[in-house]
Image (cartoon, rainbow, N blue to C red; front, side, top):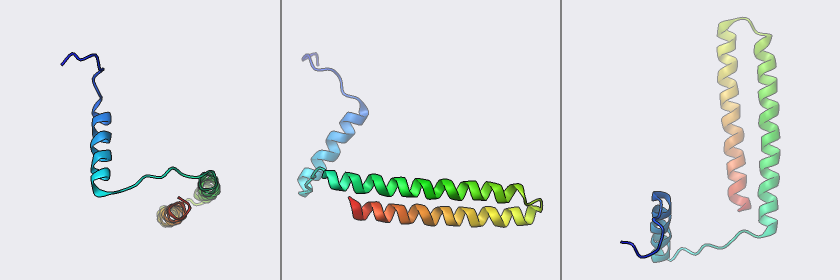
Length: 97
């Protein structure tokens, strides 16, 4: 067992197994181009800003709403809108990559 090589972590072993599985399945990995990386960064930046804006507006509205039932409805709407934005972002990231 002592052949001079350091022991591998569970993560490294799992990654090797996944890479071997991909190679056996004929999956080819190509690195992203600079244009693809830039497109991904732009999408992330835009959606990070949209999510931050949504959060700020939501918190502001909550502070002005004393009624618990209204607050609950606002929270539900916020969660739905946030989920929609995240799904939209992920779809665009899939197209960019």
